[in-house]
Amino acid sequence: MSRSDVLVDADWVQAHLDDPGVVLVEVDEDTTAYDKGHIRGAVKIDWKKDLQDPVRRDFVDRHGFEQLLSERGIANDDTVILYGGNNNWFAAYAYWYFKLYGHRDVRLLDGGRKKWELDSREMVTAVPQRPRTSYQATEQDPSLRAKRDEVIAAIGKQNLVDVRSPDEFTGKLLAPAHLPQEQAQRAGHIPTAKNVPWSKAANDDGTFRTDDQLRALYQGDAGLDFGKDTIAYCRIGERSAHTWFVLHELLGLPHVKNYDGSWTEYGSLVGVPIELGEAR
Amino acid sequence: MPAGASGEAVIEGHVTRGGTPVPAGYARLLNDGGEFVAEVPLGDDGGFRFFAAPGTWTVRVLAPGGVNTDQTVTASRGHRTPVEVSI
Image 1: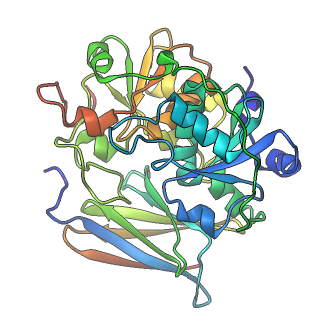
Image 2: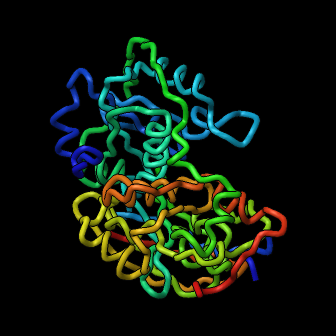
């Protein structure tokens, strides 16, 4: 797989805005961002309201995903271009989600909303009307998603990549510094995890670093064994979807899972091992 | 000590150009090693806010036109540290 199969730049998007078969989707944590302005023709997905089960802590099920995409006017053979704020965290999360449910052609806009804005490219407030489709999803692909028992079993055996900031990893903070501190009962990290903050994979403008730089970062600096299976986690699974995208989609590692339960689940489990401070 | 309800070190401020708020842009927070910690889009009033830990931080502002400017601040627990950035 080449980079252009999974990642497109702003010029590509600009040139394909009006292609029938190309659907832009903005995915944000702050969904008011879309309402204030978005790329022309883009539809909106709310990562929480649209992608999470409203009662249980889990995803919407296959039927729910089919309803969502049908209602947004997205067809099975459309090329879906995802982008969003927070350096594409939630767009990468949605990308992973589209792959879980078997969408064939989905790509990220490199740099996301930030790059588009910093380039001073056109933003509009008009909401497009797309005719309803009959989207058919597959069953969730379990090879992309890690559950808690699998994570515990992976301690000391697989690559565990904690992509949170160093202060969250060592236990000084429980959440990123722009969010109120809350949620997990305990601070720290999963024993044997390597701390490679997601941000090291991106430039200031939100675009991904080159494949050579990324390989040096994970294999060289962090000492990941690319011959082993890998699980990425963060606090709620969105930043680790960004790293999952880097390892699985850009670098092409065959066995990489995202642990979407992440620290808000692991750090609240009773009796599991936790480490504080720097990686050992 | 884990952070929690005991009072964060808040870093907040505004970005202005010639006295006018800059609503299109981003504020990034870097730790004392220069590592990225957090980022927020600027508000309509050019405002930003971070919930940090006590210590020395760099606030980096990105805005259209290639603006990329840094300011160093020292934050302490339970206090609001103001940062006014003129670009």
